[in-house]
Image (cartoon, rainbow over all chains, first blue to last red):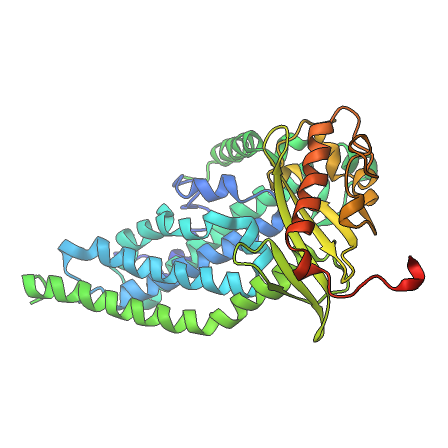
Length: 202
Length: 189
């Protein structure tokens, strides 16, 4: 159609059509590992979103100055700077969450979504467009993490954000499988199947 | 100019410089809060169950096996940490001690915290039935009944029980001077 895709599509495409976890199938490691409860999942999503949006903006801002040959090391320095910032901030103000997420906070550095967007989008687009792209992909990532975390917490513990929702009889003997790693694999498989069935990835 | 060799080196250098500067600023900004979480909130969570009244803890030995517990500015007791070899590995125990050298409460690390004792036997050391026996005891009394003391061992888990009692007693004796600040009041003798 028109040569330049509309700006709003940068934002919306990341949520469903190019959802990073369910369609592009990247960033699966935190999706599986940090979604034991809805709260942990949202904490992880917030940290990764902060890094993705900030690094997209920063990389887009300096893209005309960055030599092609050393762009990857420069991206990685920028990304790891933001990761370290969120690491310190979380340690200082959300110590419980930090304890739960543990090594997965520093591991945001190697989250493929972030380097992927830097390389594929922010390096070639303006600041505002890169911000929209980062926001859209973050929302898509957050959505999947939230669904995973909510379902696993609901079935695995009978609670939602720590407050009981299922009857006490279920909570005393919940489906523990859901909060173990195999449960995460099964659930992401089911979600992917659902998305394919709905034909979201066009 | 963008792809010249000089700029290639320089651009990386500048990126690192800015990044290092930003991180040092953030580090200084968050450091007091991180220290606070570690020293106050974190320690309170770890030691609160064995010394509920204390609101501040300070390490007293370089290996942090003894901590002084304060309420406001007043010293109200100490925390000792020990990890004597049990059946499957070391058995980490945290104990609160009052100023007369009596145990306030003890806490045995749970399986999730790295205790490797047998489920159903040694793991019972974490349960109140065993732990509560230590309340109010002094070093001389902390020994299994079969060793001539007053602590009833867990059935089938003598080695774990002994690791807890001996660990606590030996640490109490080793740091005796540091722990006991008040003599036993006469009326209680």
